[in-house]
Image (cartoon, rainbow over all chains, first blue to last red; front, side, top):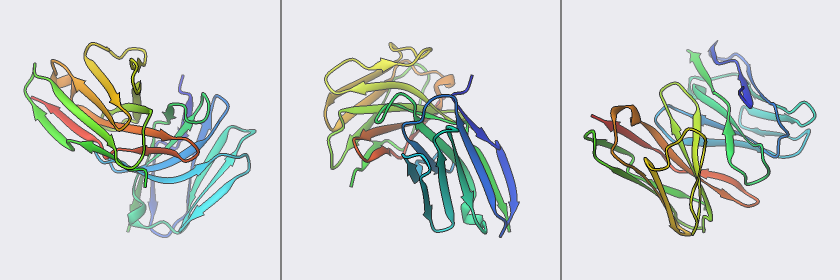
Length: 112
Length: 114
C-alpha cells in the first residue's frame, strides 16, 4: 500500500478560488516536504515542516503539519494560473536525512 | 547554496547502448545521493541510495546490474543505464540530503531510448 496518500489526485479550479491538497502518512513523519513540479522538469521546493503543529506560509501558499494525525495540508489562497502544476509531498519516513518517499502527486489546473 | 547540477538534461540513445547521467554537488559535499525515476503522470519512485565510497543500496525491483550507480567522490554520483531499452525511457532525477537543511534536487534528465 502507498505509504504517503495524497489527495485529490487532480484538481481543477477557477482562478481566484482557494484549494487544499492533503498528504497522509501511514508511518511516523520525521519531516514533510512539499514540492511543485511541471512534468519533465525539476522539483521546486515549497515548504519543509518538521514539528507537529508547524505552519509555514510563502506568498499565497500555506502548509501545515499535524504530527498526531501524520498528515499535512497545502492550502493555496486566491489561486492563479501560475500555481498550475504537479504538487508532491515527500516524507522521510525512516528518520531525518533518510530517503524521501513521495506521494503520487496532485495535478492542479487553474482556469483563467 | 546547496546546488546539485545534473547532466545531461535530456538524452536520446539507441536501444542497446549505455547512458551515463551525472550529478554534482557544487558547493557542498554529498555523502548520500538518491536516484529517482519518474514515468509520465506518475510520482517519483526511488531507485537507489548511493553513499560515497560504498556500494549503492537498491530498492526492491530495481536491477542493480542495469542501473549502475557510482559515488566515487563526495561531489559526484553517476547513474549509468546499461543496455538501454525503450521501456527505460523516463525522467531520472537525483537528490542529495543535507543534514539540518533538507533535500536538494537536480534538474532531472529526460532519457528517450529509440
